[in-house]
Image (cartoon, rainbow, N blue to C red; front, top):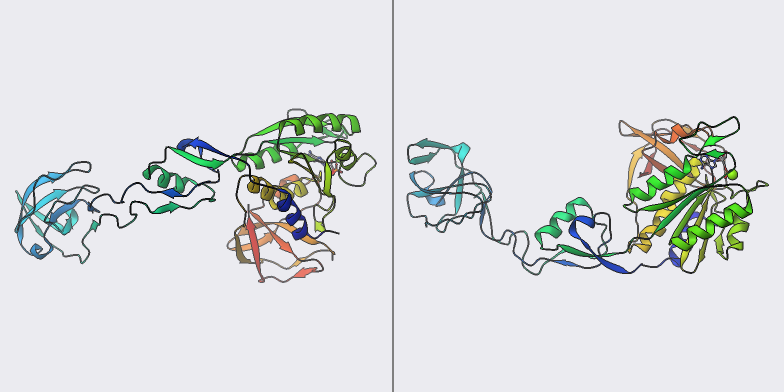
Length: 389
Ligand code: AMP
Ligand code: MG
C-alpha cells in the first residue's frame, strides 16, 4: 500500500501553479505573493523622533535649554538647533537640523520656556533615515503566504495593487443515504451531515470560497450527476463518504465513469486508509472517507498541500515539540497514524475518540501527532512533533 509521503508526492507532482492576477491591497490577505516587493522609499524617510520630548545637541545635556519651537508629527521643523537650544518634538516628527539627541519628556524639568534634563539616557532616541529600509530594497519575497503583518509592508511600500496567484475554485459535496442537513432533525437511522460544513470551513479557513452541492444519495446515478456538475464548475472537488468497501460505496467506480484518472485509492495511514485521489483535465477530485475525523485530517495533510500548490506555495507545516502528558497505547498497526491531540499546560493529550459518531471529540483538538507504523506504545514525557491546526 502507498505510504503517506508517496501519496503526498503524487498529489504535488500532478499539481501546478495557477495563473497570476492583480488584486487590491485590501483583498490580498491569505493569497500567495507572485512578485518581489520593492520599496520605493527609504524608511524612515527622515531622521525621526522615537519619543515625545526635546531635541537638542547631546553635548548640551547638562545645560538649561531654551525651547525655540514645537514640532508635531507630520510637520517640518523651521529652526536649526544651536548651542543651548532645543525644540519640543513629538514621536514621529522629523528631527531639526543641529540636534542629535531627544530628551524624553518624562526626563525633563520644565521652567517656563526653559527645560533641564533630570536624567541622561545613553541612546539618542532618534530613528535614523533609512535605518530600516533603503529605496530599492526587497521587503517581501515572492511566494510567501500573505498575512496581516505583510499588509503593512505592502502599504508602506506603495503597493495599492498586488500580484498574486489565483485561488482555485473548490466544490464540496457529501454522499450517504443516512445524511440530512443540519437544519433537519434526523429520524431514526439518519445522522446530520457534519463533513460538508466542516470541509467548507476548512476551505474558507484558507481564505478561499467554496461551492456546495449538497448530499448525494448512495446511488451511482446521483453521485455521478453531482460529481459531473461540481467538476464542470471547479478546479478541485472534495467529496466525503462512499469510498470504502461497503456494498453502496460507489465513489471509486463513479469517478472512473466520469473519466477521472484515479492516481491512488488507498494510503497506509490511520485514519483515512480508503482515500481516493484522481485528476481530469487539470482538475482534481478527493474522495475522502465519511468518518469526520478522517475527512478532517485528510484535508489538513493532503488537500491543503494541493490547494496551496495551485496557489503557488509549497506548504511546509510548522511543528512544535511537546511532551506527551500521559502514556499512550494503541492497537499495533502497519499504518502510520495521525492522532488529534489536545494541548494543555505545555503537554499533549491524545483526544479520546470512539468512532465516527463521536464528533465532539475532535472539537478538543489543537493539533495532531503522527506515529510511525508498528509503534503501539509511547511513554509519558516523550517529546513529539505536534502539527497545529
Ligand atoms: P462511509 O465512508 O460512507 O462508509 O462513512 C463512514 C462513517 O462516517 C459512517 O458512520 C457514516 O455515517 C459517517 N459519515 C459519512 N458521511 C458523513 C457526513 N457527511 N457527516 C457525518 N458523518 C458521516
Ligand atoms: Mg456512506
